Image (tube, rainbow, N blue to C red; front, side, top):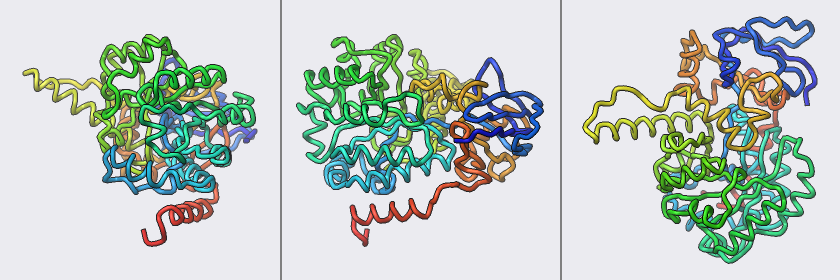
Length: 448
């Protein structure tokens, strides 16, 4: 980890902290792992200087739901529905994944995200076919330099039907070993959760068993729930069983009722919306606006890289476009006139930063450029042709949400450590490309 001071000078700074505000021009000081100061001018003799007069500084983007083990086999399910994804990929290909394949996929996903300004991930790992599969996923996450939550999920070696169709199989006991061996401390970049199947995919007694295990391990819980094709009342089932709580991250909730969304809000639980995967695979229309109205501040996620974009800029744009279409359609259908927007670009950027951090229970550490928080910082080039002109905070927000892409990411820091500088990743990308190619060939053959 870096122990030195780095001064980012003269940037447009979007702090995502309303107490501090944003700055058309300001300096930001990184001191070791932490953000030390944000101010119009900072004197820092001896600090490394990054001249950022034509740049935008934002908090690291937070990806709240991602099956990172799939990173080396991207693009294979672009034209799959959710049913085809389960039948053709999860049932046929996933059981063949070796620990080496999981390592390659997780490392590829992490580095792809870091390259695109994503500093934090939740890895929903449901290919834990052996203990070694879990160990290799964790090894990849730690080697990448990313901040991540490893969410230990079920195996697929015995097939999707046994594990995801009202399953009578309990969550693997190996999760206890992984918690003990890899996550004795919470003060590390990679931490622990359980990726449970929940009431939509298990029998009630199994769901109760799995929740008991999670809470015995003091592990946050993340689960798919309330998605098209699944049970419409999963949240209500949790409430009736006395299981709802602030330690649950609910993923999708595209067919959940307004009452269920209020129950989540009242419980202190969180929600992940995965806009592109939800729309592309028929999981249901993203419910960003409904969640906000219910008092839930959702985070955004990428979900499966086999059928979605791997960058958060695309997710932000998709979430905004979908919600604007929903807003306008509702107004016009009621005989009104669409005169003002509900979801703003600024609000979407919050979903991808501070609200994403809150979704993963990390908002005391990251999500905003608040002095004292850990320095997960991204610098974007604002004078690139797809971004310019950026003349103010307002235009900077618009540029980040509507126009930015991976090519604009100049520098990335995680807990003060450089991951990307001057547009160049510091990791050995040739190695990870080779590992990913070898994994793909093992799984699909050389001619596919």
